[in-house]
Length: 71
Image (cartoon, rainbow, N blue to C red; front, top):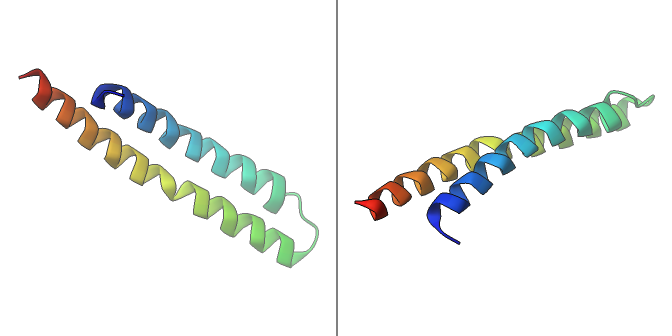
């Protein structure tokens, strides 16, 4: 794959991570009756949500690399 394609993929993965984080929190943490289950769902949702900045940073770096290739 080319750097620009990988950059686009990383951007999509970043947004998917944000959406997945919200879905995980709502499905596991938000609806749980026990405090332990609720805490687990919240932590797992936060864990998945923390991937987004990494994906966006990688997308930025790959975009810069694609621009350098075009020069």
